[in-house]
Length: 108
Image (cartoon, rainbow, N blue to C red; front, side, top):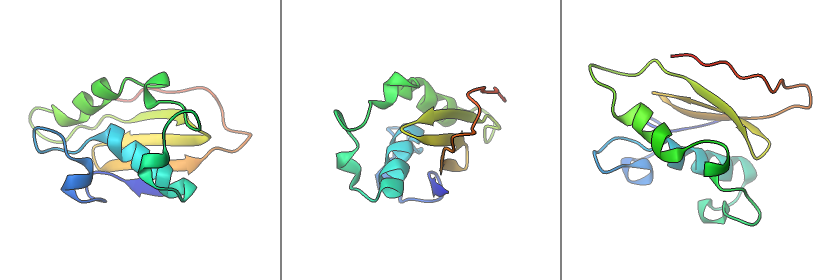
């Protein structure tokens, strides 16, 4: 498991214009850490753009525009051989096994 995000990196690394954190950037950083590469190397053609599996702007908005406290939303999806889980506390990536289901549940 490679955790990244709100409490796991410096604000400069995952900041957005309103001072919050950027889940989409944290995902790229976590994938880079899991792969043992520099974050700038997570780009085409070796890696699919994140927008091929999730809308990065919508994802960032979901976790940075919460009114009245922390979001209890959880977003989970497959990306580049990893299971990505996004919560208000940060991002986790887990290597996918061949037995992982393609079914996704939505929590919110």
